[in-house]
Length: 185
Image (cartoon, rainbow, N blue to C red; front, side, top):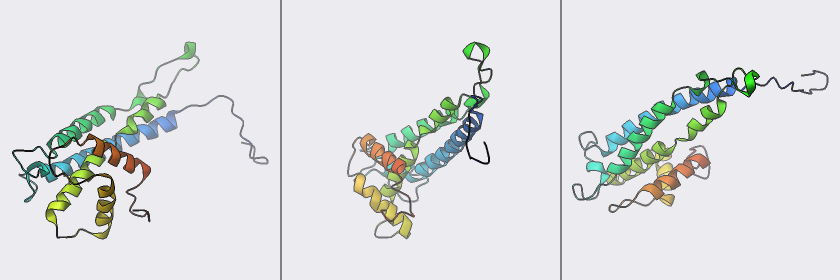
């Protein structure tokens, strides 16, 4: 960089390692966050831990599955996230006929960060759990998030595929719709 003009001239000596390392660390952190989310979901759906909520948050436990399969999906996704948490940046390969002797694998690192579905499952299960605790009210932020979620995902009144609800909630999370500081929530 030239101080007098603030110009930057690239000599082609780029290296993606700083980004690759950040993406890898974010994937590790996301795997840990997903693990915590799955454990909280288990507390909501597991009748041995849910403190009075119906098994799997089903309206008719034993006849309906409720959130059982959604929890299985969350557990599977956590397993996948743990596998993907292996840092891609440590596995470099020489390319371009030896001219690129240390490829950062940053693209692979970045692609691992797409797993937000487990958080969507937790939000859906938490909203369902709140329904069973009514007329009690949660805190203001939780009630705002609950209201926002109910605009895109209906109460579970019987067994149905939850994949569309999960996809809508995951999309809303990516858009930032559950930012508690946002006035739109």
